Amino acid sequence: MNVNTKRLIVLLFTNIVIAVHIILWYQFGYQRVGTLSLNGIVSLFGMGLLNSAAVFFIITIFITAIFGRLFCGWGCHFAFFQEAALKILNKLGVSPQIVNSKATIIQYIFLLKTLTAIYEFWLIYGYPQFRIGLGDTQVMTVDLPRSPSIIALFLLFDAFLLIYLMGSRAFCRYICPWAPMLAFFDNVSVWRIRKVRKCLGCMSCTRSCTMGIQVHEEIAQHAAVVNTNCIRCLACTNACQNGTLRYRWGLNVISTVHRFRWLIPGASGYLWYYDLLLVACGLTVAYYTQRWLGSFQTFLGAAWGLCFGVFMIKLLEKRYVSSPETVQKRSFLTIGLIISSTLIWCWATSTPHDIRLLLRGNRFLEYREYDKAIATYRQALTEYPLHDEIRASLALTYKEKGDYQHAIAEYKALISGNPDNAKLHNNLGTVYYRNENYDLAIEEYKIAIALDEHLDAAYGNIGLVFLKEGNIKEATRFLRKVFQNEDEMVQYILLIYKNNQKKNG
Image (cartoon, rainbow, N blue to C red; front, side, top):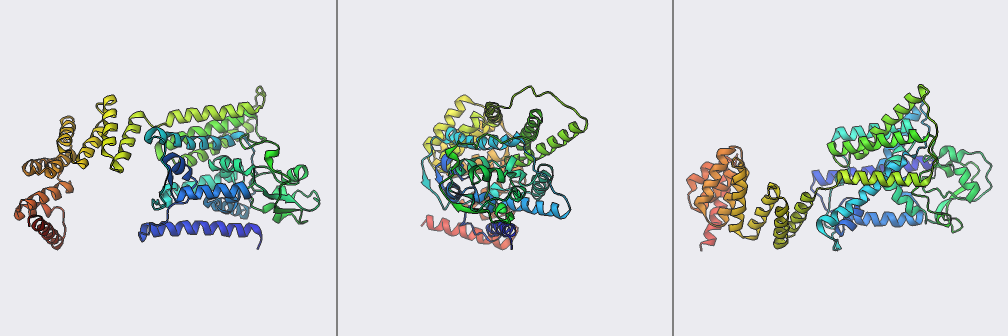
């Protein structure tokens, strides 16, 4: 069994483990193991939460700093689908050629945008107070597409079509936001593909590299592969019949001895205006896909945009459209494009100030810090007095705190602007009930039912009030709307009756 087959088996096993985790979470309610994701960087530095994702992030960075981008080659769940897609295409007689383009800056923009999420958390919740929360678990699908149609589109575009048009591991080379970050730490890794015997110059190592690295040139110049795109897949060591290459430890070559090259994309096989076309298509489609389908689908949008860009380039080349090279290929131009594109993206997708204040107040409410939540909501209402969602959250906070007079005032203010909102009347009725104003509670619940005859919560609440008053006949009339089974309703009535008896002595 060669190393490529072994890697495919390991990657398949990774996806099986993810599938088992999801099944246990949804089907059996086993929710003790949290998600393992590099998004843990946001949890850790944005929220100060050391959860399973944050631990996974730390471990992955530590492994990368020592062994290189081993995770990319042997642990990434999406790597399996890319490897499988390449094998299927090869079986069909298609051998995709790796395209080198400076459109790889798209992944740097994605990474910087992801890191700005940390700053967003600081703006909303303040600087993080670090705490351990390994019990705060999330299902893996938080970081994965959930819709079957979206999953199918991912496999079609981000695996098959993107690889067909731009070569093996195209998603890793052009879209994955974590690749540049791991490449940064790869600079200091001591485990590398190294030359241990004389090279015969067959170039089989370069032809086998799934990341398009000129392995034979790296070996000739440095006696090791120092390119930070190396994912330690070991395909080159497997392809070398002379045994020239080995994955070994050593200190003779660390790329920091030269300089950090992780931010500057390599040489391009396209003219500069073709690169610019790819970047524009990838980012534009990714931006609108994020707005319409959600944040994770940004990667799918980037694949759509890149595929469209490649088709455009092929059309231009077919029509022999050319343009003079008027702009020199300077590193500062690349960095400038990365920074400017990132700033534009962040500005266009940043959280509005009113939503930041709302989220900050909700966070205080979640932790039952009612005074801080109230202060935050009141600050927000001074700036946005007509923001109903903020006022509703303020009313809820007063209710949870037990300040019923202020809660009633806020709900009445909401109802004055939304008199036909059944849920608001139901919520006001609940405040009256907690304040033991049963007649007013019943009145509000009846208004809610008149406005929305399918609002089960109102039927259940008014039934509870009648039970509290000892009026079982009226309570039964409303509770039948909630309980489909007569026995369940009787058991509920008996439970409430027993609780009332205990309270009354």
